[in-house]
Length: 114
Image 1 (tube, rainbow, N blue to C red):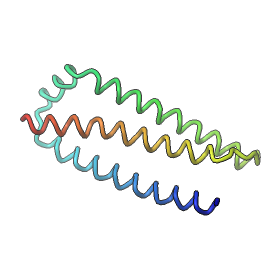
Image 2 (cartoon, rainbow, N blue to C red; image 1 turned 90 degrees about the horizontal axis):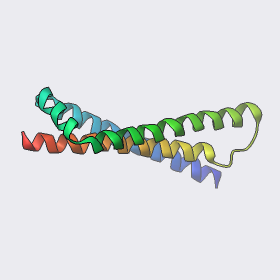
Image 3 (cartoon, rainbow, N blue to C red; image 1 turned 90 degrees about the vertical axis):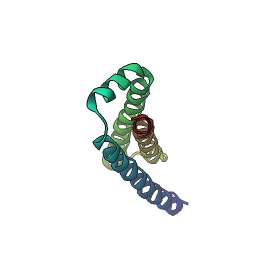
Image 4 (tube, helix red, strand yellow; image 1 turned 180 degrees about the vertical axis):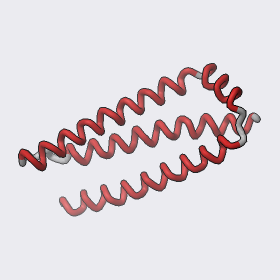
């Protein structure tokens, strides 16, 4: 059972890495043709994008901190954390992907209008 969980985590990490690389690469390509003044104006008009991004980044940061703490507890103190280490890693990746996805959708819609 433990082997299955670790295998799932490795496959999940690789899939999440590919998703992040693809979306960030697409965003960089979309940003090349966008006027920076128009981008700032659209961000100012759509506050929910910034609010959601900060929320996802805060969740990712908290789960990263919890992941580090559980890793410390598990390795140095020898206390079993009952897969909390892996769960916090999944939460971090999901929250980070959602934050990047918010900007990916925003820039995709901006690119279509211009």
